Length: 320
Image 1 (cartoon, rainbow, N blue to C red):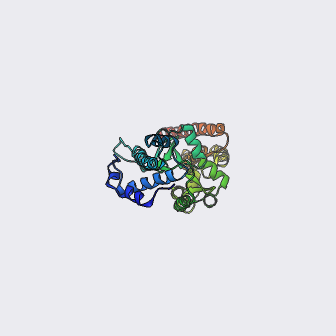
Image 2: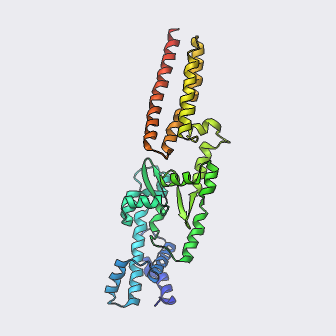
Image 3: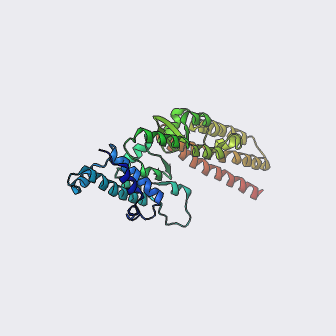
């Protein structure tokens, strides 16, 4: 038997709904919490443990149990949202911290193991991303129900979500990569994405993020090179190794100190974005991790060699 409309309206509008200890939750959010709790108790998403408790407190009276369930569930939801609110100890607030929370903190709130949370991010169930080699989850996911919503509410959320995302096919075409590559990078936390209606989508914010540093129109070849957009193999072997061999051959043909100085300045201006590109391409590399590690080691050695060469040229100038 469903809840009657009149008592439900009274429960939502009653002053008692504002005295449940839900600090920092607005009246509008109160009503949203009551609606969510009501949908739960009327549907198949009830918390088994909470339902067992309220049935016991109501001595088996299902109607009374429903109202007790709503009241207690609203308090639970309010506490969840309160615990999910950003807590900052530093004076400067990072925009990323406002939107995301560490996986460890999220797993405690949802009572889900960290590994399971990361797996659900990779599978597109939760929105998450890697920052500084650590996984983070969108704070909006705290109020998300693990079980499917009724059809009408699901389609409502789907329409709202799509406004913030673009299809992975469109994104991959813009970035010049395959859809499978884009999905793999979402799973690895490089891009923010999610599955909506069994299709992968990428956040619009990723388009603006890549548009500034790596746009071929504004940045050109060297911008894309430094950003690692050509991929690890091409950046390392073509722009790094092959060009490096040519440079070594040409440097042996220069006999004057002045010519060598000019040559080293030009080469340094070229080599810096190459080293940056190899490093960033290694971070994006989806193949065996050993190649990414070796490439980063080569970058460190290349940087040391470049500095040593500049010091040698500086010494020659000093003694000239």
